Length: 182
Length: 150
Image: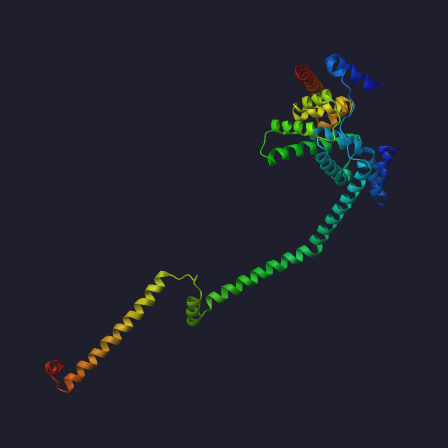
């Protein structure tokens, strides 16, 4: 499917007559990237579906304030990252459990998830990623799976590139050690 | 492409074991999920718009008059309640005391009312005794003879 460039989509969005159509095109263009980013954070499809919908509705509400100082997809990634963290924190509070237990629960969900087709080494990799702190997990996923530049991750998370490089380096080392020990 | 090569190089240097693992996405989604999702978002967006529009209309057209009416009603109700409590006659008050188990009374008022009743009863009793004694004196009747006859 061919997609319009972002500036064209934003121009269409600013015109009230084509606003809904433009947003529909934006959703179709970026939904998969947003969904997979969220799915890697919350693990189950049901949760990822909820968080993705919330993200896209929030983006719809806030898009008229988007200043084009950053790229559209980094702005959407930012909303998706915040929504994922908020979701995980709510989950923690709702069940009065610590973040380590949430990660354990996610790890259990991954093992029994019918919507996951990875082999044993892939499962171990996912479990290793789940041992990372939330923000480090975001950094690792965006670099390792989404292949984003540090400059873009920096805009998404509001963290300096130097700190992101250090965070990614630590994450990679931790994951490799976890897999080797497993 | 250059970016992808850089990331792989970086990974090979930092974690050679990890760089050999296939990075393919192994999560699955239900069939046609990405065809349906834009429609779900579109519906939610519309509902959200209608809700916002409804709340906006409600707040501008209806909320202010409704709030004013409610406040007015509360004020009128309070004033009426206040008037009822201050303009009750003693009969209405008695009825209220008898009918309402939860009617609260001032203990001092109860004491005063009870004392008045006792004093009146005492007055009635003493006036009856005075009449009998006056009758006996006026008619020269000996009290001892009455006692003997009894």
